[in-house]
Amino acid sequence: MKKYLKALILVIFLTSILYLSGSSKEKELPVFNENTPKYVALTFDDGPHYKYTEMLLDGLKKRNVKVTFFVLGSNASKNYNIIKKAALDGHVIGNHTYSHKNLFRLKEEEILEEIDKTNQIIEAITGTTPKYFRPSYGNYNGKILKLAKMETVLWNVDSLDWKIKNSNQITRRVLNKVSDGSIILMHDIYKSSVKAAFLIIDKLQEEGYEFVTIDELLTSS
Ligand code: ZN
Image (cartoon, rainbow, N blue to C red; front, side, top):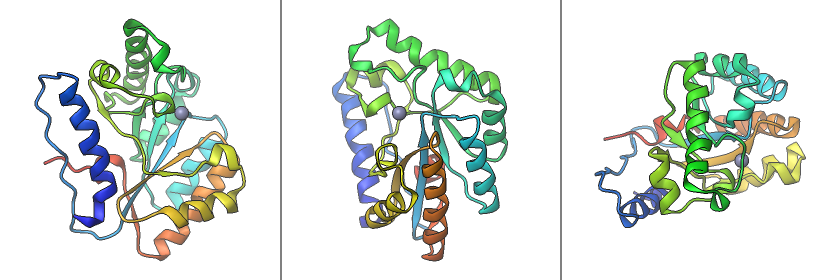
């Protein structure tokens, strides 16, 4: 149980919030696949970016790595081909709201619009309804989780790439914090983040880590 403790705590926490918020829907805790020892999930928020996401996809393909993208509906609608390519390459596409507003400040119908509009765009491009939701700024409460009706996934390793913007420093920070079962937060809208992602992947693969999507990390029972 120690292996995936951090991610497990996150899921239990979110699930308990769902219960507390009065959701009548029975929700089972995901069971972690313990067959393979070191699993790590890279997640990229706020894209896709017309240039850097493309660069990222090329590098991921070369390294045979699958990741999870939490895209903004507003960016997805401008970059259909990139989302399509990412989905075809086997990456998971999740919902990160339409315009990255602070959901705490929105009315229920506005929150729903942020989520639904993005799901519709992703579905139109990939043919699949997204399963995973990551609220903008990681801001969520019982109301938001209930409205989303999706699996909400946060992270337990924050690369702070948007702030650091230096590939080597981002890499060092992530390598210091990573452990088995980590969900790493990055942003595919900066060149330094994409370069850092490649450095992180190369190093962790050397150490025997396997990169998986959120789907694979949280194997449903
Ligand atoms: Zn974001």
